[in-house]
Length: 479
Image (cartoon, rainbow, N blue to C red; front, side, top):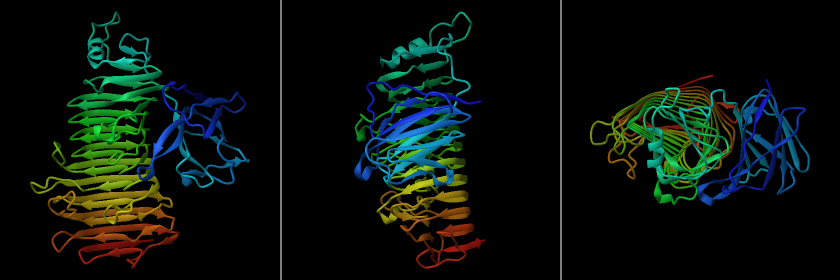
């Protein structure tokens, strides 16, 4: 069944006027989307555009270029294979399923349009139900929120277990909203919240909706994150967007059984990674779009107050855009005071990498495993990874390292790493590296099946393409 939901935006939130975007069910009236300003690229911060809506069935999209005539256009990821038509000022196409897209006019990637077509929600909470605390746009004091959540049971016998941010602009007075166990935080489409969501020693929490967490007005060194999940379990994040957090978009420490789905984020600050995990287990990340100015996704062992191994992490069906650093990173941090950590049982599958730009040679790698701090990284699978032309970096970087900026001691080992159906088409990649550290700190058993660079299947190490040092053993290739 064809269905379409569009949302208004609060007047306090900056818009962008490079594009006008319209959507409709075929044969019905056009509806205009609000186009948000989103900042991108730490190297040279610029303002791009973003719009979103919900859909099922078929939806027609019309985009008008208000700033420049359309000489050429591309819709990425290229794997979407989305047919479109364009004239001098207008581009049109049809969607038959939800997608996350970058529409780029005349080769411009920094003033592009990010268009997010979400699936329609089937289980959004009803703000009129007595178990729901409805917050209208305002400045909210957390003590008032918690007092109202803890109010007496309603006439239907249900306690309040849902916090509902209605469309409009919301400010958390204390910035940090610490969510109790058993609570759903729902940010409705058209709602924008200036504040950070925190799950600390809690369980059974959901943060979801179609709205936005906006942290653009906070200074970089305030270090606020979009969402923090610490010492917690059974946490889900679904559907929301974060804009320009000073630090990570989602930050996980010593947590387990976390699900992150249909999450979108943009960042421009130093250390403003997308989703980072320290000492976490059983994490599911699915259908996310991350355009970040540091690592998109990073998996570590022990760091700060979080001690332990990391395992059981799945990242699938996602789009990663690293304006700086790594799209996928594993292994830097661990328990260097002890024997290091085990980081294992990790799957990256069906992923499009749209950018990787890192001028520092020690931090390159669209897919990087840099084992430091006595860590062992093992049993990692990369499957169906499509890497589009990037500005600067390496396709793959596997190293047991002693990075003295971060590691008091070298890593221990990398072993049993598999790449299946990984492809790169572009000209700016430095050689792939597979480097052990010494005779004791080795890389072992790395296999490649259908690794393709510019259409050529790589079947052996080759200087300038894929380089292996004397401390890497058991490297194999298949067609």
